[in-house]
Image 1 (cartoon, one colour):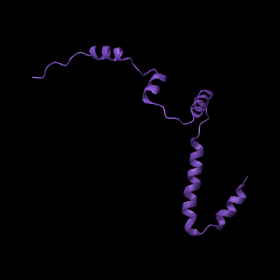
Image 2: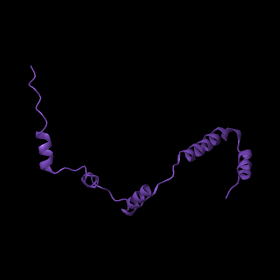
Image 3: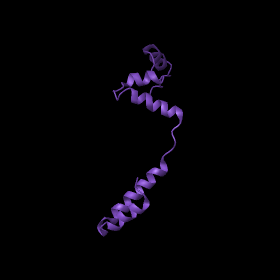
Image 4: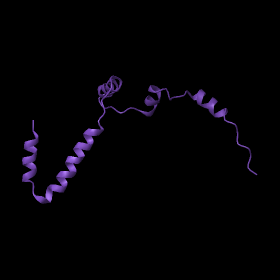
Length: 90
């Protein structure tokens, strides 16, 4: 594993024309590490389940079923018929 002294040596050897890019990259690495949050057990389990699917595509219908967002055709028709009709425009 690299230590800070090795990093300083590499930076000292960089041409002046590369210093801006190196600084931007180091700031990016630092900023990215500051935003990481620990993963709780529930999230880890969901990630494991997603990986277990092997990256296969999931249809919209399957997603709706998994999250309880799917309605049966009769429930959809009932919901539509329950919406009051708009008054006629004059």
